[in-house]
Length: 365
Image (cartoon, rainbow, N blue to C red; front, side, top):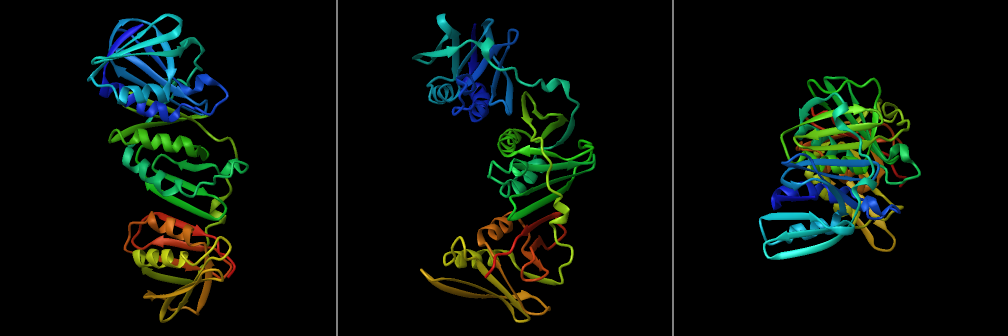
């Protein structure tokens, strides 16, 4: 096997592949990237950790056919630092590879391509074409509230629903929840929601940055996303996502509307005086909002904010980090914090019709 390829073209595939290759796995092959010639003018670059798989079909000039697998991270670093604009890669004896660029020649150890795991075939699925920016935004607005506790695997991803015209993404870690809904004309029609794992979403986001539109398909147990000559397959989490609608408060008698940026800044200042077990207190009266925090080891802080509020006085405790992360995903100037009682979840929404909301569980204060 021997081929020539432009350095920039090779890096386009290797940059994504080395993020997926699993260096911590007990299977050494999963730390490798597969390189295989396809005809005279294309090479296949593939990587998998058995849950997320990527294939890129890159333009090349192939002198002889064949395949090899090489350490993904090492190969990527070598090509990034190669001096020339063109790379020549040749398979040598005992699965070694000879790589030349400019006046530099490398010899690196590889493994046989026949031992590389079979990656899911994206060509067997039926696709919907959607805007990359919409999916990327939906991922951004839900990824931060995915649960990182691996024992609660049903919460280790984002729940995705789509009826062909509207799509919804929801995530929760038990302490907070975020939900975004967007109109996607001609989107996939799903009979039931699916759970997309966090690592898969991170890799999908990286692929989405390379073009204006993408093709999406769900063929159980995988989600497939194709952008031009790059395809990603993500193994879905087979579990029951909790009934999130029951978590979103419906009966909120008290609505506090305030400036989003000032609310964020005040919470960050109060957070400096809080601890893991002692949250920040948000108190609302007709005169506005007061944010306080006290810590026996550090001291206390009190800040007053202008706000629209006409209900009975109320005080509620929150973990400020959770509220700040939610507010950071909202673009509106004003936000509304809707409350039931002092021990009920808080519902946060941007003012101005954006189909995005967050729910934060209270802390005892």
